[in-house]
Image 1 (cartoon, helix red, strand yellow):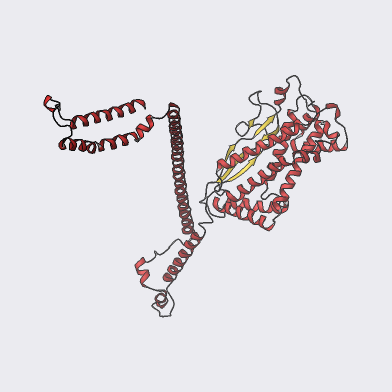
Image 2 (cartoon, helix red, strand yellow):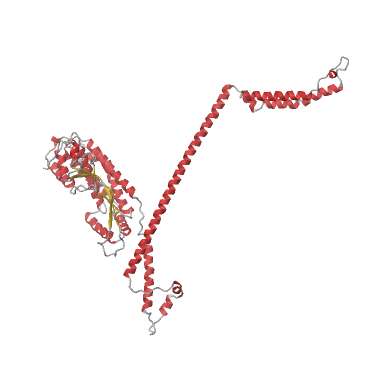
Length: 508
């Protein structure tokens, strides 16, 4: 700032010097006053009086220059100028930060706009696909109608000719015999026109009913099954961790015998025998796998019914009706019937969902307590955690989350999905291991061999009816396409080699 102030002062000095030089007369000897000349002449007085008045603008310019911003800044102390500089620098930094934030927001908005455009493009593609499928269904319906109609049909009259003649004129048309009745050809034509209009009205009324729009996508259903498997794993791991096991603590009481019998009927005799014969005090991983298997079986049985919590006899009747409809009708028709039936069953029984949720939680806790009994859990004898009441007190919220996930998935697969039928699957212990339809949970650690002990993770399968051109009374020619979206994970007897190769359990 100091060089600027010096420059302004130098400019003022030059202007003042130039003013005095322009106003002062050039020096010469004749211009010097002599001793005998009068000192105060009128002309000289006038000149002296004029110069101060002519110099007035110069004073004003000097005062204005002294009060100018540049001159005031020049008079500031270095500390004041430092504060002004710091304030300006801080303001510049804030402005740069705001600009960076606005630029980042602009990039985010551009990314959101791009994703929205892609979503709209995918939606348009889906709508076009639905339009084509609807057109295909309409053509199939017309083909069926033409196959069921008379073989010899008279072509309908032109549209303009039909518009000129009313139904009154048609009734007045008589045969050559003059008996007042319409000819057979005209009767067939009238019936055919009426049937065509009725068929078109029926097709238009069923367009909404025959829709294939799904509220959930296949990826969302798959993610729901993954979340359910994670909940089951967390429950099994937490319940096994808090228990203390002792092989010598097993008692041959009536409760233990009943638990052994029930667990064998649920999970199979192989896993029940392994749980009762092995010592789980050092590594209770087999108990955890058994808990995962029993919860998976509970979930699969609950989802295999048409409506969870419904009476078994009524549920079997409704399931048989749906099976016949699924084989006889197109996929949208059977899916819509399933959705309406499931929704109205719950409307007729408002407390059915809550009752089914409580029943599922009770079943999971009871089956888990039986596994802890045959595995030799010490906490059960002390009445702490392995009993049904103790498990409910400690893990009731986790089990309720599992049951809530099952209920939500059942409602979605029954009511919200029309294009296919999703089923949650588990592998039975009586089947042989098939790598194409299931996966070994310990296949990366040991070679897969032996019988199936339990299903530790649920799988997902979709079934779709692909042939829709056969008559309604033909069921054997229906083509059902089944695809395994998620393979269930199973535990084989080879897991014993991975846990402890030295110990082998022979069948009793």
